[in-house]
Amino acid sequence: MLGGGITGFIGGYALQYWVSAIAYPLNIGGRPFNSWVSFIPITFETTVLLSAFAAVFGMLMMNGLPRPHHPVMNAPNFEAASRDRYFLCIQARDRRFDRQATADFLRTLNATEVSEVEG
Image 1 (cartoon, rainbow, N blue to C red):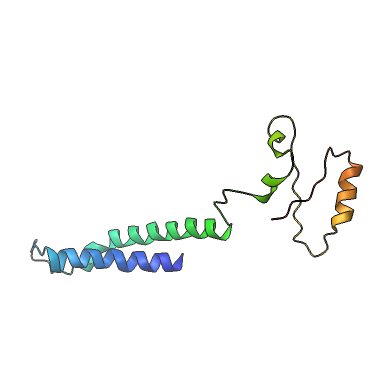
Image 2: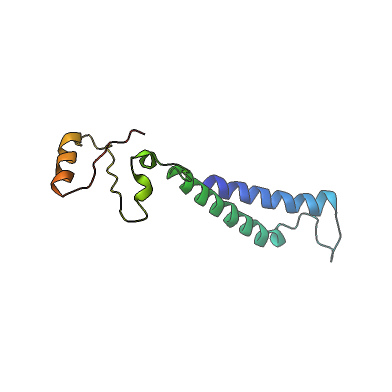
Protein backbone atom coordinates (compact mmCIF):
# COMPACT_ATOMS: atom_id res chain seq x y z
CA MET A 1 0.00 0.00 0.00
CA LEU A 2 2.83 2.35 0.78
CA GLY A 3 4.33 1.77 -2.65
CA GLY A 4 0.96 2.38 -4.28
CA GLY A 5 0.47 5.56 -2.25
CA ILE A 6 3.90 6.92 -3.11
CA THR A 7 3.36 6.07 -6.77
CA GLY A 8 -0.04 7.79 -6.71
CA PHE A 9 1.39 10.86 -5.01
CA ILE A 10 4.30 11.23 -7.42
CA GLY A 11 2.22 10.30 -10.47
CA GLY A 12 -0.64 12.67 -9.64
CA TYR A 13 1.64 15.59 -8.89
CA ALA A 14 3.87 14.91 -11.91
CA LEU A 15 0.89 14.73 -14.25
CA GLN A 16 -0.48 18.07 -13.03
CA TYR A 17 2.95 19.69 -13.16
CA TRP A 18 3.56 18.43 -16.68
CA VAL A 19 0.17 19.65 -17.92
CA SER A 20 0.29 23.03 -16.13
CA ALA A 21 3.94 23.97 -16.57
CA ILE A 22 5.19 22.14 -19.66
CA ALA A 23 2.52 20.91 -22.07
CA TYR A 24 -0.22 23.54 -21.75
CA PRO A 25 0.89 26.50 -19.61
CA LEU A 26 -1.83 29.06 -18.95
CA ASN A 27 -1.34 32.23 -16.96
CA ILE A 28 -4.51 32.37 -14.88
CA GLY A 29 -4.70 35.24 -12.41
CA GLY A 30 -0.95 35.70 -12.30
CA ARG A 31 -0.34 32.35 -10.56
CA PRO A 32 2.90 30.54 -11.21
CA PHE A 33 2.68 27.53 -13.53
CA ASN A 34 3.80 25.24 -10.69
CA SER A 35 1.00 26.13 -8.28
CA TRP A 36 1.45 23.26 -5.84
CA VAL A 37 -1.37 24.42 -3.54
CA SER A 38 -3.97 23.81 -6.26
CA PHE A 39 -2.41 20.40 -6.99
CA ILE A 40 -3.09 19.03 -3.47
CA PRO A 41 -6.66 17.68 -3.98
CA ILE A 42 -5.84 15.65 -7.10
CA THR A 43 -2.57 14.46 -5.61
CA PHE A 44 -4.45 13.26 -2.51
CA GLU A 45 -7.07 11.48 -4.62
CA THR A 46 -4.50 9.66 -6.75
CA THR A 47 -2.64 8.64 -3.59
CA VAL A 48 -5.80 7.13 -2.11
CA LEU A 49 -6.80 5.52 -5.40
CA LEU A 50 -3.50 3.73 -6.02
CA SER A 51 -3.22 2.75 -2.33
CA ALA A 52 -6.64 1.11 -2.54
CA PHE A 53 -5.73 -0.71 -5.75
CA ALA A 54 -2.49 -1.90 -4.16
CA ALA A 55 -4.41 -3.13 -1.11
CA VAL A 56 -6.99 -5.06 -3.16
CA PHE A 57 -4.51 -6.62 -5.58
CA GLY A 58 -2.06 -7.36 -2.75
CA MET A 59 -4.82 -9.07 -0.77
CA LEU A 60 -5.83 -11.16 -3.78
CA MET A 61 -2.22 -12.14 -4.42
CA MET A 62 -1.54 -13.03 -0.77
CA ASN A 63 -4.72 -15.14 -0.63
CA GLY A 64 -3.78 -16.96 -3.81
CA LEU A 65 -6.87 -15.73 -5.61
CA PRO A 66 -8.32 -16.12 -8.10
CA ARG A 67 -7.82 -19.87 -8.10
CA PRO A 68 -9.90 -21.25 -10.97
CA HIS A 69 -9.30 -24.89 -9.99
CA HIS A 70 -8.98 -26.48 -6.58
CA PRO A 71 -7.50 -29.99 -6.23
CA VAL A 72 -10.58 -31.20 -4.32
CA MET A 73 -12.45 -31.04 -7.64
CA ASN A 74 -10.49 -34.16 -8.66
CA ALA A 75 -12.12 -36.22 -5.91
CA PRO A 76 -14.31 -39.09 -7.03
CA ASN A 77 -18.04 -38.25 -7.13
CA PHE A 78 -17.35 -34.53 -6.69
CA GLU A 79 -20.09 -33.70 -9.19
CA ALA A 80 -22.68 -34.75 -6.57
CA ALA A 81 -21.44 -32.15 -4.09
CA SER A 82 -23.93 -29.50 -5.06
CA ARG A 83 -26.90 -31.78 -5.72
CA ASP A 84 -27.45 -33.95 -2.69
CA ARG A 85 -24.22 -34.04 -0.69
CA TYR A 86 -21.51 -31.85 0.66
CA PHE A 87 -17.77 -32.28 0.78
CA LEU A 88 -15.49 -31.73 3.72
CA CYS A 89 -11.96 -30.85 2.69
CA ILE A 90 -9.30 -31.32 5.36
CA GLN A 91 -5.92 -30.03 4.28
CA ALA A 92 -2.76 -31.72 5.53
CA ARG A 93 -0.62 -28.64 6.13
CA ASP A 94 -0.31 -29.03 9.89
CA ARG A 95 2.77 -30.97 11.00
CA ARG A 96 0.62 -32.79 13.61
CA PHE A 97 -1.76 -34.04 10.93
CA ASP A 98 -2.12 -37.83 10.83
CA ARG A 99 -3.60 -39.12 7.60
CA GLN A 100 -4.80 -42.48 8.90
CA ALA A 101 -6.22 -41.14 12.18
CA THR A 102 -8.19 -38.46 10.33
CA ALA A 103 -9.60 -40.98 7.85
CA ASP A 104 -10.59 -43.32 10.69
CA PHE A 105 -12.25 -40.47 12.57
CA LEU A 106 -14.28 -39.49 9.51
CA ARG A 107 -15.37 -43.10 9.02
CA THR A 108 -16.63 -43.25 12.63
CA LEU A 109 -18.89 -40.30 11.76
CA ASN A 110 -20.58 -42.44 9.07
CA ALA A 111 -18.96 -40.68 6.14
CA THR A 112 -20.23 -41.95 2.80
CA GLU A 113 -16.79 -41.86 1.28
CA VAL A 114 -13.32 -40.85 2.45
CA SER A 115 -10.78 -40.22 -0.29
CA GLU A 116 -7.38 -38.63 -0.55
CA VAL A 117 -6.70 -36.00 -3.19
CA GLU A 118 -3.20 -34.89 -4.11
CA GLY A 119 -2.74 -31.31 -5.14
